[in-house]
Length: 593
Image: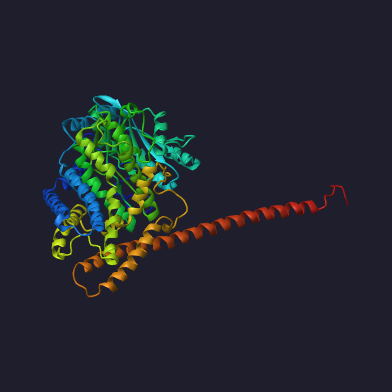
């Protein structure tokens, strides 16, 4: 039977108890899904493409840094700075992906999974057809699990879908709704669906503080964190809990998989994350450096207690918590298997707020807790992996520097490379790097995803602001993806992109007029600038569409508010009139004639 979520989308798994009994000894289909999830990361074709891309990156770096090819200083510095960031991070990312052959499911895991349930106890309790009542065992001892669903003002239907699925997860557990939105409706919903409800009086520490408060009440050996819009699969616990048979495992993380890839922004954001979850995180397993991403994760209670709770001094509490756990010698596991499906940002505003929060947290690690410092109790591999994490969003600032290069040539005749370097030579090395990067993206995502290119080119104002926030210590307000509220026009958050688009558009016109019919390198600068203009123009079209939708929604909200006011005023007027009429009507005694 097809199962639909609250938006009418078909979920890839049922959200209730299975129609047929689940076998106690395991699920062959689940094993097949695990093999499929690992197959892409271990593909020989991918490995070969990675090696070719590495060679292309090295050749491009040699070409750029060759003093004989250097042009005017300013554009050359801009190009070398931006490309050095992109090249360095690309090489480190490819190194990580090439390490992704490590499989964390060892003999101990499989043995623990086979002994996760006690068949005689299930038969004795008469719970054969109800996997949610099957007690979990590790090393022949009961393992108690709490599932935390963190909420803060999300749509009630979204929360209900997640709670229903969490209650139906296989294995005996307790489901808790941690409501930072302090909603009586959410409280009643939790009670109706069989979940427990926690509301705290303060809101300090945001999501991490919410979880820490819940840990003072829930006392399970392990706890799961789910965002309110991530619907778990029934096998969430059976696929993750067996890893904890090793006493040094602090948490098991599964990927964020999205079910709302139906807009340009959601597709671009989702495809960006897909590469990370399918190829980068599996590689980090080999270095014991896979980090928590805030949802779809199972923690060992003792590990979190060992570091004094979830980290609360950053909006990227997930990465910071992972870093402190690794510094204490704990181990992390990443499983490239979808165990929950959620929502990625669907609008420019939601995407900007999410990326700003993530990037600020990454830069905070770089500036406040540099993983390369000898004071950090990390292995060299872990240092490099966390350094990549903390500097990753610099690659989002690099496009800003590259956007400035064509205008310098069009207006001031300043070229990054010598004029006697032919277009063919430049293209050979340039495509040797970027062409192979595009081919790599094509292979990993299944096709060329232009939405990713668009978002990568226009997101630099977000990352510049994030770096400034980290440098100045400015606190970023907490926002929740998918939170209910009035629609916001994207033009409230993309002023830099609008100004940049206007500048590039004017520059393209000037460049075409100035170099019309002039062959050689100046034509390349104009073509480069026109391409950037077209990319930003596509983003502007998306922004205009979202603006029109936001205006319509705001108009509808105002209309509803006026109707409610008129109804309330009308009721008050009628009530006042009736009272006045009663006062004007003479009161006579019952015996009067």
